[in-house]
Length: 155
Image (cartoon, rainbow, N blue to C red; front, side, top):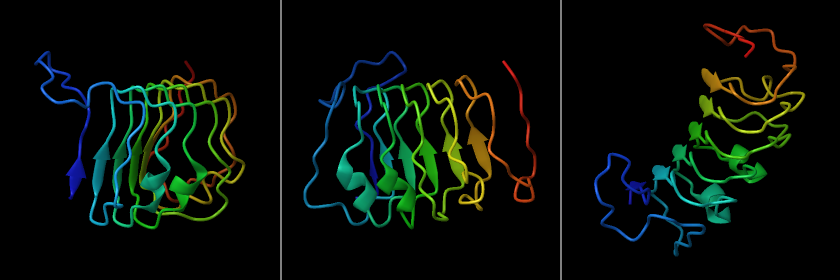
């Protein structure tokens, strides 16, 4: 299994599968070859624990749910490159403290009020970050050397 998308259709087509309003998902055995997982437009409050254990997962989409947090373990994944978790209720990010491989982190329209102190230093590969439409008033220090373009807009 390379990709799993149990999200309901978003183009006004009738939903013809049973995955339209999930609030939990158990998959056994652990999908060893799963690279892309889309759980968007469901009713997840928390992501399933097993996601953090998928050794080849590189792309996670969990937007438009009711997520209140991202699991700390997910930031320790050696393969995860992109997280899209916009339009949720996430109010904080864990202080994961170790460098990881994330390149894209899209978290706009959540309830995040601050970023962890060492956020930018533990994300040396980060190329795309969208944290707009949150409640962040102050960004942690970063030297900007890893960023091609940094744009900070106050809304």
